[in-house]
Image (cartoon, rainbow, N blue to C red):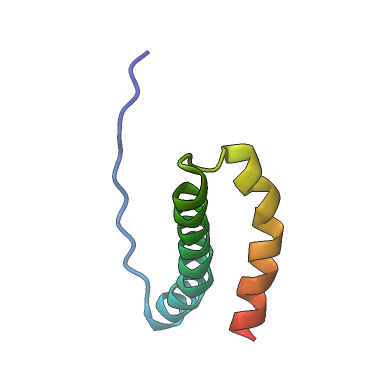
Length: 70
């Protein structure tokens, strides 16, 4: 069986569009935190963090993202 890629486009009205933008902020901060942490670990050790190590830190980063959001 062959897998197909099916693109979907969203055309939300104003209320859902605003909600999507609100949700994007915490996701961006979480991604950037993981990226910065990975870069820091690489600079210190010469190796990137493992998936398991970043997964363990994820709940802490999420609470930090919630604290920033208010």
